[in-house]
Image 1 (tube, helix red, strand yellow):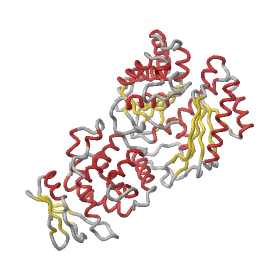
Image 2: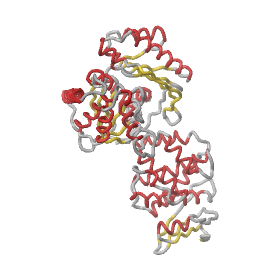
Image 3: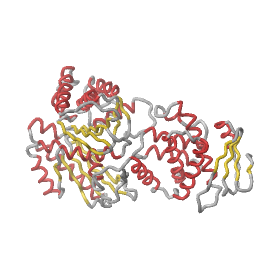
Image 4: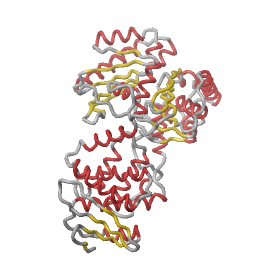
Length: 513
């Protein structure tokens, strides 16, 4: 079967995407780089709360119309200021349900020149799938997207959508309908859960199948994940790829439901615009996870907006390997200290070392070691001597698509272990465990050796390296090596591999001094 790769067509040099949601609106301006990755040029959001109007009056109030027009005028200014040549705008659940929704959109086009596409629930789910799943290392499962007015569910396999459904289970809509006291009473919460459960059952939503994973997106879920992340020591700040357990969703939902609106808005990690909708959304997500028998959800930091932009590249998701390759290529392209030939030489050496010295290394360790060897020179853009620390800062801060948080932690730990022993996994708990320590330390040593040897071989070709293992020693034969001295690497090698390290070129064995 032919592998799918990243599509070549790209959006215009700058494109703005406007999403008029039921709870809030946002504009994001993107530019596609040479690797086909979308880079954010500018963004802003506005709280609109349209679904509250629609559920109360079946139409958008004059005040909300004025607020929406004001927000869209600001969004247009952001788009034009970023140099966007094209503005893609969509409206979702609240505008679909409002009697005067289409009239508002006609006014938007007349007064602001922005054509808003009123998409149905199926297309909203389609764009959400394209955006949310693309950058995650997942192959099959169920994606949910909880907005202000609706919940979209998409079952997928082989990174292809199979079935989509849209339900009126948005966070603000549920909160506004069921949670009438502050804080909400137990019976109100019970009725909300029962309503969500009935809607899911009627839609034929069943538990996850073996091998399937639950993926979620939307502001409600990201706020829950942020509350959880802030409550514990966690080494990665980004939420894209964060794993949130059902137990923690239930605990956070109980915590938030027990507090008044004013108290909820002071909870660390919760956006001050989510206080009036977060409880309804949290209870809906918890009920969904119970229905699916899902023990955890993988959080996506992307959704409809990214999906709309990526739809310009095509409607088919590339495989995870292609997404990873494009993400790495996008990162290194931003730094003139990175050289493809040098990185390729280092990668070839580290691969030869791994095959000779760690032949049973896991696939995830081999891939992390290769990525670390590829990325190392990015750190030189800040400082040569502390390049290991600087590249780790960039790897952790950058949203590397296609990588899990554990993948990122492994790459970072190997880079730090290359610089110095004892700096591997400990700082990356709970993503890395104590049993990862020896493998990370050995991989870091191999990266340090490969970097050391690459610097001492003539440029222009890929150095060859052969590993010969003896009872008491290991000999690295590098015919192109000009000269070498260990400067402590031989001692590290003896500690990690319990053998003496010998390094040879085609003529001599170099001393360990």
